[in-house]
Length: 132
Image 1 (cartoon, rainbow, N blue to C red):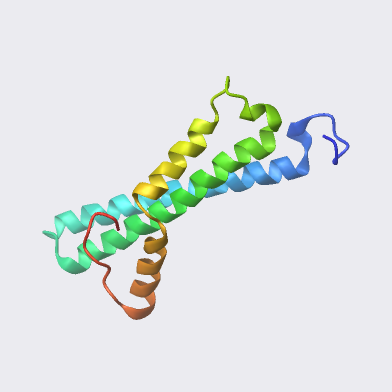
Image 2 (image 1 turned 90 degrees about the vertical axis):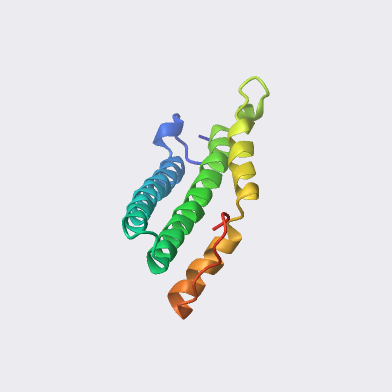
């Protein structure tokens, strides 16, 4: 590595830090996804009582928001850490970033942060539509 004076990339402290950060974000996203599933089960078992559905919607929004951040971080780091050759068409790594980005456009995350904050700070129920 040019700046670290190390021969192998897997020894580089910044590479290790960045990969650790991505892994933590992915594991946190997985944990929120499991939590959201539990809230969905509770909502279904309640007969879809509004407060339980709202809690489930908020839990799903939290999972989606963090998963989006993790996906974009992971795909950006793929290029950053793998270097220039990772952009070559033959590897087709850009599909990972493109897929992550497309999901964020079809289901905008920016409103999830708003809904979660408004719910926890002001007790305002989020709108009931498929995009939360």
